[in-house]
Amino acid sequence: MREFFHAAGTTAGSIFTEGCLYGIMALGVFITFRVLDFPDLTVDGSFPLGAAIMGSIVVNHGSPLLAVFVAFGGGILAGVATAVMHNELKIPNLLAGILTMIMLAGINLKILGAPNVPLFNQTTILSDVNHILNTAFGFPREVSYAIFFIILILFVKLLLDLFFRTDLGLTLGALGNNQQMVVSQGMNPKTLKIIGVGLSNGLVAMAGSFAAQYQGFADASFG
Image 1: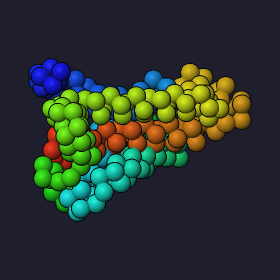
Image 2 (image 1 turned 180 degrees about the horizontal axis):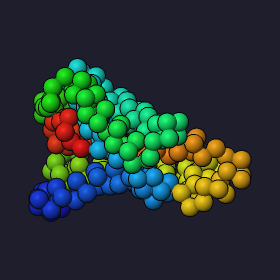
Image 3 (image 1 turned 60 degrees about the vertical axis):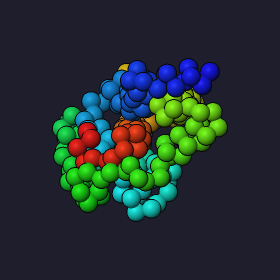
């Protein structure tokens, strides 16, 4: 059994692991593009934002788990900025996302303090997972990562399913198909867009934080 799992830690395993990692980002993008019908390019800045926050906190000996939550919050703020520009300044959604993306390019550099920060010798969530699974079961690194990301993406998917079954989630889902119906039900579409775009970019930033851990470095140009 151990030989089988060692054999699985190949290039194919690496591709599968990356697919699971970017699956979290895809869930975030799905919310804006398909659920809200909101073409959002903020993700090109919020993905490296998550990596920058992760790198900055970890290299300063902060908790990697805390860094993931801070990255998620940072992504939410980026999405909120885009939605507010679209709602209040009447900027088209595509252009609002581009403006936020451009602003984040400088912000990410400021957070990192350098274009690129290595994380190879730092303690991260993935390094802890690899150590635990390798010690307990002898799994190679790629298999340990794959197991972790499968569990993570299933957990995120479960939470999203639960959210979209609530009254708020159902209304959010209806916004992209029929905004007038949402207005007639007494809901403010501006508020719903802020929530939806913020949640989307929060997930994308969280994916960026795990991408930095997986790649072993945080780069301001990850987007």
